[in-house]
Image 1 (cartoon, rainbow, N blue to C red):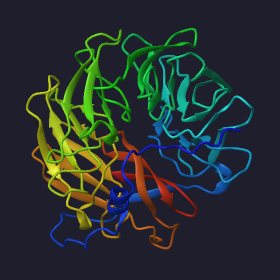
Image 2 (cartoon, rainbow, N blue to C red):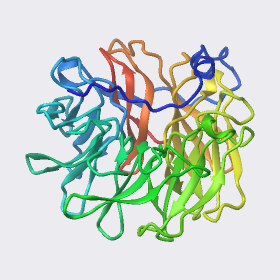
Image 3 (cartoon, rainbow, N blue to C red):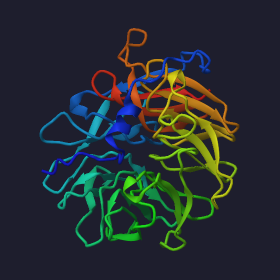
Length: 402
């Protein structure tokens, strides 16, 4: 069995240590929303899988489907779960690693196609040990594609798939391709994968953010930092669904944030919005940014300062109404364990929850280090996950988008 552990960061050890060090002392001036808007829905225990990283999928009936990236079991590495609507009852739909060619490490969430089938990726596993694409149709689970079979094929998909306007699925691999620098691919109806962009020397590499198909029909994504190519601090890139019109939209720098570990979203104003893990006014803080789709008018809307405000975000933003965005930081907050924040298009930021890892109101311990992205439900509710914390390792939570 392939037990290759996911490698999702490309930072020097000293810098990683600096980022993960204790956050600054809480800043009393940081805006805090009133408590009482947050509720833990579920706390993972080992048989269900641990360390949920991917964005959950909320079904029409209110059920929640997601992935836990690992398992506390020698036989399985990760699970696909269903949290039944209106309850705390969780069902394991599939335990990964159940078979010699099954996927391992489902670090991204799942999506639904037009027929209601569920699709996802695993970072490892498969016959070649380089990751898989899987589908669940009804109660039937199947591995549709195994990466690594063909020369130049991508390796180690670390993001969720994107359903294109043409009904086809698009995604990225962190490594592999003709230069082993990652790929953008399209999944064909027969299960084969067509490489649309082989990242090559002199250009971006290691795509690590989910693809967005914007209103102009183009696909947009982000690449992570790469010190092998000098001062390559990551990019935003674009291409057409047929692989043409490849271009770099923006190259990140220390001042405007760098190492974007999440994809971009398109705001109601037609511009791209996103976050970075590092950079900005605080070197290890990260930023929220905005940029036009043609690469012009790049603006840092907010530089995270750490302390009770939070810092280092690997979460996509979500816009709940025009000019109102929600996101998460991995560290910082009142206990240094991460935050959920609300940000206006002006850059004004308010923390609406600080994760603590401590029991709340006599209940289960709070989660820590939120992962994936928040999912809006109804008019004022958001669903999310934390990779750690809770009873064991990982939680599902909801909070009001106020």
